[in-house]
Image (cartoon, rainbow, N blue to C red; front, top):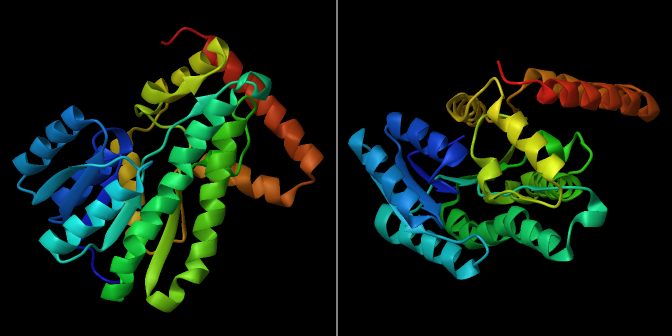
Length: 275
């Protein structure tokens, strides 16, 4: 794997994207963050520069191909290219499928799936011209382990994994790498822009995020380590990885029974007042 000197991160103004930006900046890497929240973007840019990083902020909506193409051009013009593109921007939609509107399905697909498609199409020509580069796509354990009342989120994250695995082979001939990140719940602001068709589902998701034992900084460190080691699938939660192995090793009916029990335990734990 070639050395990483220049990084571009979508959704880089807050949460995991910001944590990754700070992680790379502390390593002396040039960091360009992209986001639609200009106020948060400028604040994160100031933090990056305060630790001595060479950094930039670009307003970039992953739902707009031109924004991503402009970002690729900016990196080519100003930094002579980019080594790592982290497709981190993503949103969540929760609720029983009968209550989730088609508009919400279109919204989450446009960001979580097509946002990565647009980014890939925008940056691949630059990577091909360089004969090097790497995409890191942020999926979720929700792309493997399907909790109820999250069909839209689960489906989009499963698609990110499928797309990433496809491109791992497809891009080999260009010397372009692809990795996919599959975290479970961690403390971040995912719930901030979440849509939910159920108050109960929304409350449960927010509590799972807020009460998670691990934060975005720790997840960013695990991801950076996985990228450095060129790990194809970067898992950040050992217990979730064990559940995935169980899914693959036991009859599915037994796995569903195990999942039912875990869902009930989570619901019971989340119903308790926070200590």
